[in-house]
Structures are given as C-alpha cells and as structure tokens.
Length: 97
Ligand code: SF4
Image 1 (cartoon, rainbow, N blue to C red):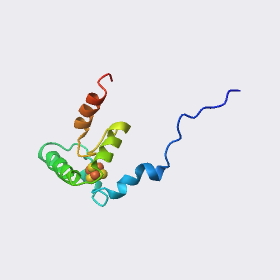
Image 2 (cartoon, rainbow, N blue to C red):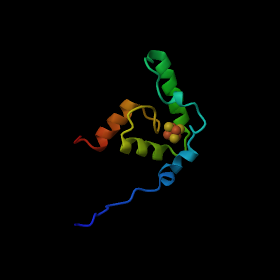
Image 3 (cartoon, helix red, strand yellow):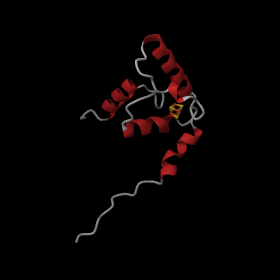
Image 4 (cartoon, protein in one colour):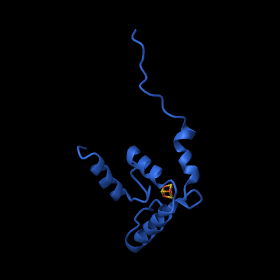
C-alpha cells in the first residue's frame, strides 16, 4: 500500500485566527458588519459606512481582507470591503475564474 503524502499540515486553529484578537470590531455588535434580511437603501448604506469606518482604523485590516479573499467569505464587511467589492477584488486577483 502506498504511503499517504501530506503536502502541508494546516496551522493550529488559534494561530490562524490570532489576528482577530487585535481587531477593531472585536467588541462591536456583529450586526454592523452583516446585513439583516431585506435591508435596503439608506439603512444599508448607513450600516455599511459605519462598518467601513471601523475597518479603516483597524490594525489587522490587511490580514482580515486576505483571509476573506482567500476563504471566499460571501457575506458581510471584511477588511473594509463589501461582498461586491471583494468579488471584484477576487476577479482582479484571479481573472481566469
Ligand atoms: S478589518 Fe474590519 S472586519 Fe476586519 S477585523 Fe478589522 S474591523 Fe473587523
């Protein structure tokens, strides 16, 4: 029987998420970053602006955005970007998809 070859072990869970300990949103209500059902118009724009304001002062913004782009997070504001903005950024990073 051929031996299994592991290409790379995943990092310990705590290590891969430790950047979140320094996030500016750590103690913020998560509803600021994720839209409720049927949210539209000014309420949506206002919530997203508040989330982006928080992200703009976050010292782990780059790690957060990298995580969201690499993992394909589909919902919410991550790294200061909306779902649509991340989708466009992923297309720019990998235009073949
Ligand atoms: S960039 Fe925004 S969503 Fe990401 S950890 Fe910082 S405050 Fe939270």
